[in-house]
Length: 282
Image (tube, rainbow, N blue to C red):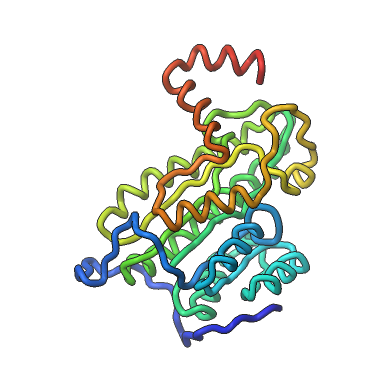
């Protein structure tokens, strides 16, 4: 396991609740840039998570903890980013708590959480096995929410921090043959909006990064390759750039590429027209 310089905390634990009030001196504006600190990235074995880890390492000033299910790939990414690797499946009992405690013990404090772990499944919903439905929601939604819930009191207590959730355009508009994945990503977007209101005045921000099609092993792992001519996949590094924009500029929501926010706007303004176009060109 790759190791990086850290500031161990004995018996850090996870606080049950944050302090009710913070002094003005300890607060930072939620939209302010984070200069660096402790960062935890999930889904960092490959794809977007690995690209985010490399981008944070390139920016400097971050003490990184990386989580992913593929031990060999994760440790390779960790070696290249001077990070601490924590290979684990976050769907196991108590896995999120163990990861949160490990991150706090390893880097002293968590100023940034990039929740990038996710899986997909493609095919008609009527043929989707029930265990696959559960797994998509467990990995994409429940594991992410549980981890955020564990780390938010810590961030609020220190008066600064940012959570970045990696969503998907599928969660904005819904994608044929990806009904459950679309629902899971839509849940993350709604969650980010709701928690953002709760965090006002705490010094903690939450960002929703919404990629379109990304050139990663995601499609191979879901069992169905990406066959559409448009939109063309963008490199994972471009999503990592969007994550850095969200972190450094305090952005609430970033679409990658930027034009992909248009379908959602059309759907919101003219839902009937959007559905006709989607049914025809889907």
